[in-house]
Length: 166
Image (cartoon, rainbow, N blue to C red; front, side, top):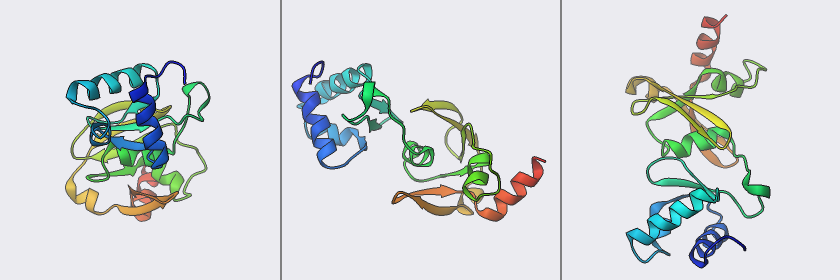
């Protein structure tokens, strides 16, 4: 494939063979000789828009079948992977839409966590991080989308939340 080095093609091929859309730095270490080569591979693939950085150590692979490097993934799955699957829950309009309390398609995914705050745009998905308590995170339930678990505000809390918006 034009524009990709041998190591980059090797990494992408290995990840696609293992059906790994989401991968970590450790997966790159299996192919890279050292830390410097890992950094250069990541930097080159980010520049060529073949991968997207989710957090410090986790990345999303844009598959070869993506036309012109554009691809989309389910926003709830992206949110789960960006938070490493713990200490978070999805709330707001995303939760209301998931529980079919509204027909309005959410423009962003509101993520309540104890660690981060701010806004992030990944794969045309706007993630907005809000601070919350560990007690509220424990009240969240685990749901699945396409065999991928994610944490979301429970239905009763979502009903209360949507009533407060009217």
